[in-house]
Image (cartoon, rainbow, N blue to C red; front, side, top):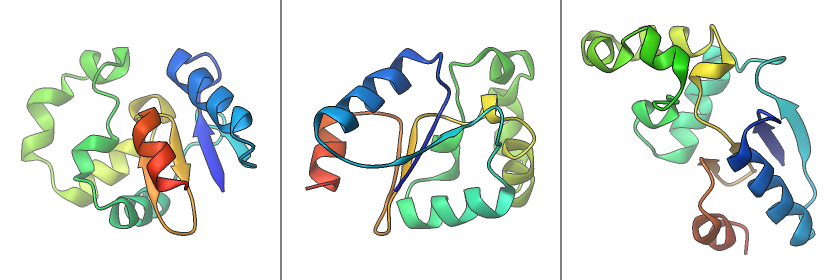
Length: 116
């Protein structure tokens, strides 16, 4: 199981504490130092069943400064994946990749249900 996070992110810190408290072993990956590739993001999106826009960190400074809210609707999925792969700070976090599913963002109830 891979836990993709940004260590300074408080939501990522909560998710990590939750995983540890529940005795769930994982490999940690720093999203800024080891940015997900377009191929990984595509695979995760397919596995998660979520729309691609859920993988964007819409509350991040980079997202806002690039005015992506207005640009994303006109971009193809391939263009969106390529953009996400340019900078880990554009990607919503944390991401938990398991054999069965991919969880994006931390909602304790959803994680508990998925990892039972």
